[in-house]
Image (cartoon, rainbow over all chains, first blue to last red; front, side, top):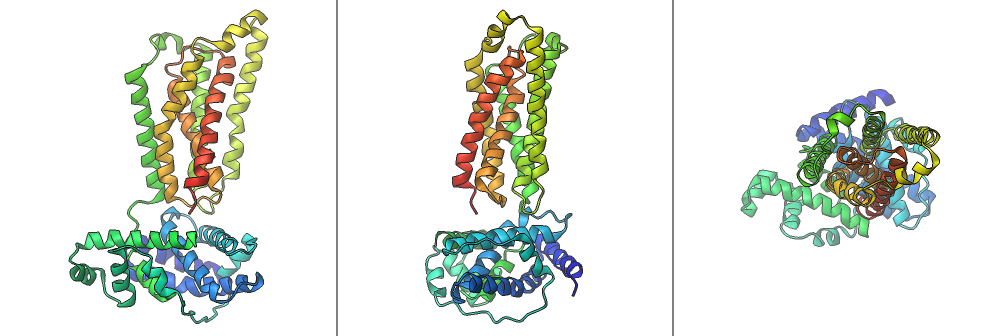
Length: 184
Length: 211
């Protein structure tokens, strides 16, 4: 797929997602992740970081896209927004891991043009510790939705909370995860 | 956590309650109205506002602070948006500064030398140094609240832009009270007050606007 066609497709999904369409959002995230992963692995290799860290970088960048998606103006093209946010987070993440994160913007822009590559997600060894550092009820909600695949409504019923409270808590949990990465 | 699990999690949090642009508009509107009301209920507008409005110096004071407020606000709004052009809005800030420089030169050439000192010191320099920072508090708080939702590439620069925008708004509000109309006064005391808030904004931004 060409860059512009791909960009438009992603933009359409993200536009719907911001209105609350979870399926479109899922499509967007699943489509973007392999490119982020390929880029993160290339960077880690280039700066001599262990490949296991690449997946952490991917998750950090995904969290940044998620938490800052409100800054994308849906009337504008997605490409410049996405490449800038990815580059900034990538630089930030690599720098924190003790590598020089000098990533040129043009280089990041490549991922909109890159060939489809399949990369298996590496399993994170410290998955548990990350979860354990969340507070209640965030931890239970994260466990319920991500590991057990429950919906917001099922989670709300199980934890005897309102759906709104679960949503608010979930959003806070994602913010906390980003903060945990930042303080790592 | 596996990346797929993280994606599942984020998917359930798909909708955006408050977009960044709307948050900014809300924050700026509230902050500006708050400060304007604060001025009116505390020190008030100057009594001879209607009659002095036509004099060139008052008109200049009001318009140059307004121009700075609009341009600095535009920059602060851009700086939190990834991929938005911020260099040109930053360069445009030179316009109000050039306006003040020209006004100062005109003032110096038309005023007799022994009147320079009184024009510079004015009547209410301390008032200006106190009220411009105080009136910038509400817009600054609003801008920081909105910028926290933004994604500025450089938190220090974003904080400085927020400080500049907030104090420029404050100056544009204070100008409706300020009895000192000389560009010499404006170039000295307003500039000191605005610079102070801008530096404070930069220091705060460095700590608060990381993401």
